Length: 200
Image (cartoon, rainbow, N blue to C red):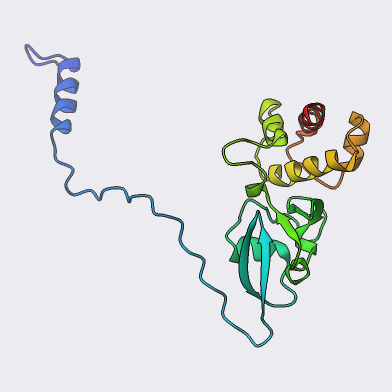
């Protein structure tokens, strides 16, 4: 039974207004975003060797074991996590980077073998704020879904054009067959590569 002069709407409105005046001093403020933490250097072992890699136009000094892959050196020591670790055995193409302009699977490439060579990762493909034509084409054609394989797809597609293997959709599919997209965005990927090839 409603009280005289009071309605359900009035009670709810008054309760909400009252709650809005309660101070929130007991709640912790959300943490401020921190700058990316510096990657600690690896624990030095007798097997480690000092190397210098030329990555995206800058020199990076690293200490690596002889068996360290280029992928692990880039992600775990250089902090360049755009290159993705997928299968870690050369089957998916997610880790594709360029070495001296040629595409390589960084999970199968030893970091120590890349001294004296120019390494380009997805972070170094654009020129400043200007996207590489392949990056722009992937955006234009929505050539990704989850995005995990996208860096490797873009790096492989960019190299594919330089290799002269973008003459037809069939040729693109053949030469991109080492890059797997579990989301199935292949038609859009092929369309993006065709667009980038026509503009290049």
